[in-house]
Image (tube, rainbow, N blue to C red; front, side, top):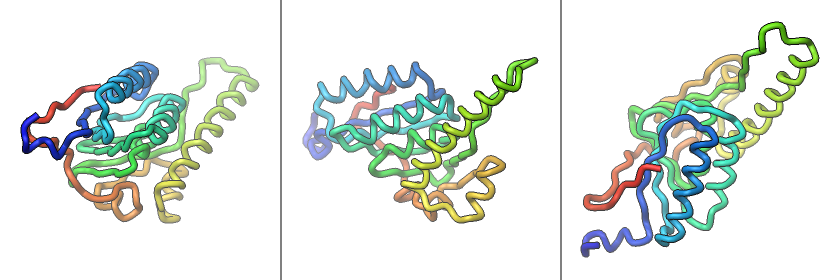
Length: 186
């Protein structure tokens, strides 16, 4: 590492994209194992995802937010649905000026010909997922009553400037690894 990059010792830059699912969970677990081995103290992670499975997103949030290293998350394009919960694992959070966020309630399709007891189980699962994600959102983000009303019935879209107003991000700032530093795709 050159002298100019010595000030970045202990820092790593990573990209994480795709669906939030069990494959992403495994990839993050593997990447964190490598980070530990490489003695990364601060992980800068650019996230690009339209969402996926609630339980996998909550697992990644809980895992990343409690690691003995500093996680800094970035949004350079779109972080949506359960990926917003994953994004909130960052101790510091940034978004590019043109980035967007979207949060919404859980949804599922009922199987054709589903009986009432099966539908009740689906609804109860969706309500439990909504309660878990809303708890995490409320811990980090200060949405207005109008935002919560939109969220209750529709997709809530936030620009980077709006995300800054509600505390979803700390600043409008691009993911910009220093010249000569390795960027690893998770």
